[in-house]
Image 1 (tube, rainbow, N blue to C red):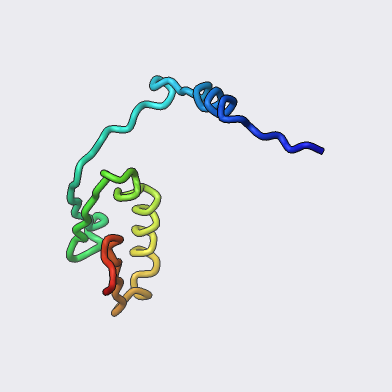
Image 2 (cartoon, one colour):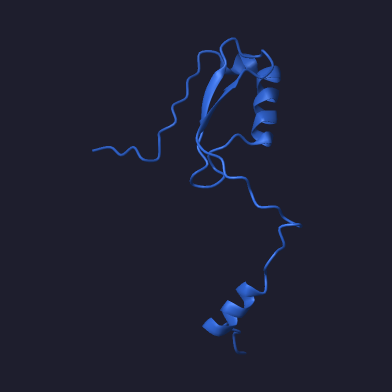
Length: 96
């Protein structure tokens, strides 16, 4: 049985045929670097100061699902986080 493979010409036709109108999927607004202060409606005594940086895509932003999860954890499991710390290493940091 022969495996189907796409030649470069077929691949370019395939990629060109999958154009989606902006009326169906609007283009994303480009955002710069910004800071957000999050207290989860007063659940945190001192708000978190979060840097949002979208220059590399959508990974550097607050996501609604993450906000819902964080609020749930603060409401239901606050004591589990007492005396806990977290360190997030910046991707550009390298040990030498």
